[in-house]
Amino acid sequence: LGWSGHTTKRQHTPAGYGSNSLGRRPPVPPEAQGSMSGSEKDHGGITVDHKQQLPRLRRIEGQVRGIQQMIETERYCVDVAHQIDAIIAARHIAVYGCGREGLAIKGFAMRLFHLGLDVHVLGDMTVPHFGKGDLLIVTAGTGHLNSGEAFIEVARKDGAHIAVITSQPDHSTPKLADVLTIIPAQTMANDQSAKASVLPMGSMFEIAETILFELIILRLRDRLGETAETMRARHTNLE
Image (cartoon, rainbow, N blue to C red; front, side, top):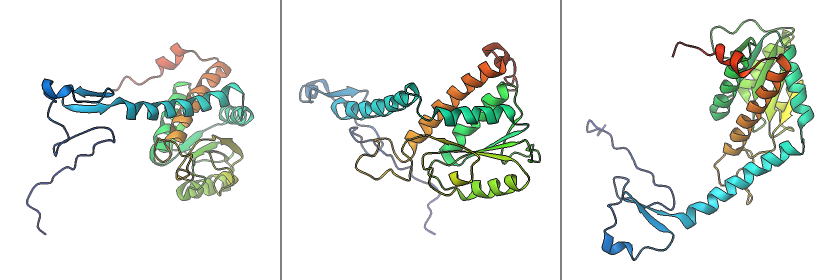
């Protein structure tokens, strides 16, 4: 239907960066560089306005520091302690999430495996039958995840415990949890307000969740008597 046998990839240029139709400006000639503003620099044909980029980086820095302050003041630490206890007590562990949250929790599963725990990612053919004594961990930042709720229903029916990680505890998926961990970071549920993060959609939640997972791993490592060396010994050599 009018296809000429090839496709054209559209080039997207971030605000503050200049480009031509191929995604790159011609290098600024030396005689013209004197007309550039003090904050603009020519980097191999790409003109960068640092005055426009630095405030965005500072906003991200401030938001990450907010997460750091939450950890330092031990906000929600009881929730995290309960999740750690549930992980240690579990016979089998399964994790589930979608999109970028799914990537974060898969990385968490990998580190749980390195700690010597029996952990699985839902969707793999090696996930065992889940029932009494098992733990299903679901990440649902926005507070509602249809597929996650379906898995929760099946696991709970056979006696498994449910842990949910979210930023919206009053929504439907968190209400199904036995163990609830709240991360007070922006998701797509609240990314359109005047105070929204400069990062798009749920990026702040996903970054905060990844940091939290690493902190949980460190605490678990101490509780389980593991070391960096024993964890490293379990890393795959088939790469």
